Length: 86
Image (tube, rainbow, N blue to C red):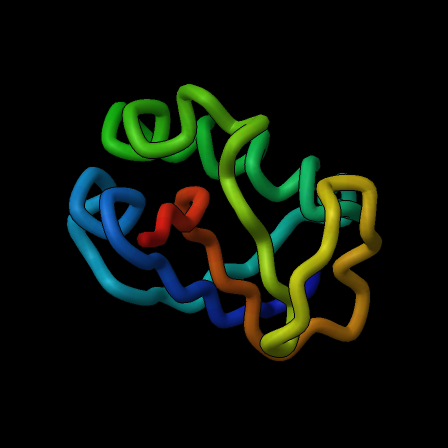
């Protein structure tokens, strides 16, 4: 199991109900996409926050990555919705 710090932003944070947490991840969680799937097993609030997981942005150690990116060695993983600007 790997231990990782997770940070949530914007409506992801609001729906999960916390800004950050540290989790022990099972060995089956290898990629950012695996992480999103695993988080949805932790409760209804995670399901609500990640129901459209294809739009969730992921940053590993403050670098944006796609959902196929391995998370091995990550110290911090941030999850946030797409940015809109103007």
